[in-house]
Image (cartoon, rainbow, N blue to C red):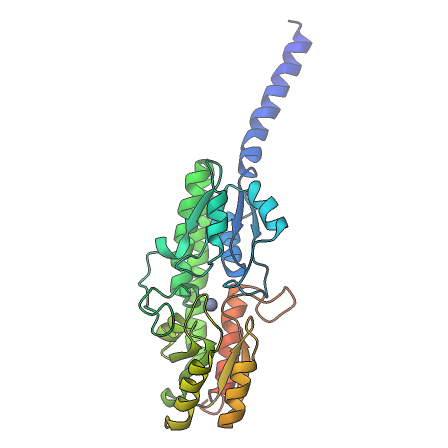
Length: 306
Ligand SMILES: [Zn+2]
């Protein structure tokens, strides 16, 4: 072999070797079931992993049906991070597609975080899936995500864990910030009355009581019986709630009707099951919690207590 050919071969080898980690690091394709999970995954994955979402921001994660583009994307995917605990009933169709290449990770089920039980409706007694509404719950998700990505790309494990640590710190700061923003709301006003009972973990984290017209997960929206129960609560309970709230992914008709009947203000939207679009007030997880805190602060008398 001539010197020139040897040199070219060496150069080629060096190029291939130096390119190898970059190729490996971008070869993992991940999908998140909904927009909140997508953002948490992106915080840990950095630029090393391709991350996309199944249910786009603004859509109802409980009632989604897989689209043809979803199915095509899933065929090219290695890991699906989904919340689980019944949040995404449609995940069974993804499970049916899973094979040696596709791993499904039920993040809420694996998270080291104490579950609350659903207190009303069709799924009464089962764990409430909306754990991300408490920043500590979101931090527990971060750990599951980092551990999973590290398993799939061991050579990048240190980077995943370092970013997970950053994310945990940011979530702890956010937790404190939201707590302070909600501080002025008097205890008697700390009631979160929404369509779906999806704010249980938020309520536990920030000392509120939370009720929904209906329970959580996939069930009939606002049956006559559920509406009558909330209507009775509003008529009989004293002191009266300061406001009712509607959520971004659920039509506000039920809360609107109840608010008119009880002559109470209706405030919102609260973002629970989805982030907003990029131009909206809840474009990422932090802004979602900050926005919700602002809505509550204004509607529940936080401003007057300052
Ligand atoms: Zn929900």
